[in-house]
Amino acid sequence: RQIVAEKIGSAQERLPQGMRPHIAPISSIMGQVMHIGIESVHGKTAPIDLRTFADWVVRQRLLTVPGVAQVVTMGGGRKQFQVLVNPDLMLQYGVSLHDVEQAVRASNSNATGGYLERAGNELLVRALGRIKTVNDLKAVVVKAREDRPVVLGQVARVVEGAQLKRGDAAVNGKPAVLVVVSKQPGADTRRLTEDVLSAIESISQSLPADVRITPDLYQQKTFIDLSISNVIEALRDGVLLVIIVLFLFLLNVRVTFITLTAIPLSIMITAIVFQVLGMSINTPPRIFSV
Image 1 (tube, one colour):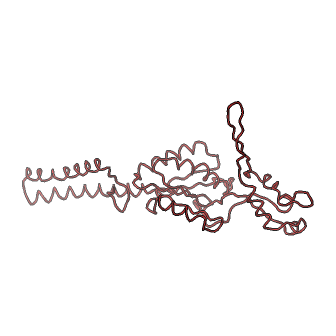
Image 2 (cartoon, rainbow, N blue to C red):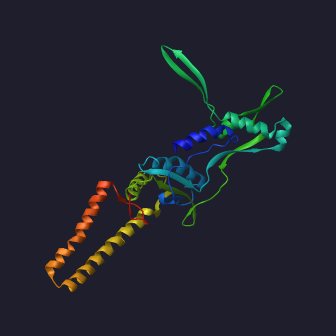
Image 3 (cartoon, rainbow, N blue to C red):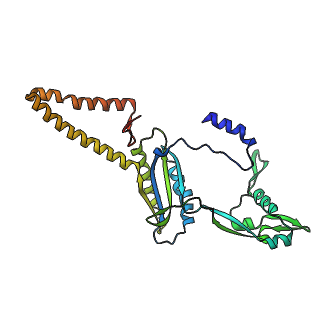
């Protein structure tokens, strides 16, 4: 990953303007341990507000759980400021679409202004230009016309809206937000699931009355527990069959008992090796994995 990051940094200047490559966390489809649904119980909370809650509350909290590699949110619609230009007003004020784009792009940034020395201390000077509200965006100067500034609100309508959807999510047929939690390589799925559930429980204590979190849409832990249960059941039935077959063949209780001690002894030795080597029961396809 370090070598790839270095190569991307050296190639950044040759990429088209506005392109920012990102290196995704180390995970795979088998690393998806949970699917969590966030929905409005009575439909009073808009899907865009559910997505904002998922992005800035749920996702940020789950990323702090040890063993979580990635948290992806889907559905609801990500909130953004939308500039809906008026061609007639643009023509009237002599403003082009390029002027609007450049003004918006240049206005949404912070800048440094050096430092100020006072009483032996250095105070950093910063110009805060980040757009926070619709009114801030409306006040952006697009062009000066006859020594008078033309602001964005004079040539366009600025509203809050949702980004263009490339997918959507639903829970029980209702619009919702889906949160997908992926684990880091080597993380214990069962323990990680319990930690994520604890984090969700802490979030649920301060939820709005109309919002509900459903953490059991999909849990890989369920399949792992089922696999373990099947293995235990198979071991139980196998031990009983072995006892019956050995006794029928040997017809000697003492010899049968001595032979049967090999089964729990091998299981105990396997458990000790697992403990020493740090192995655990992680995934359904490969029950025993490092």
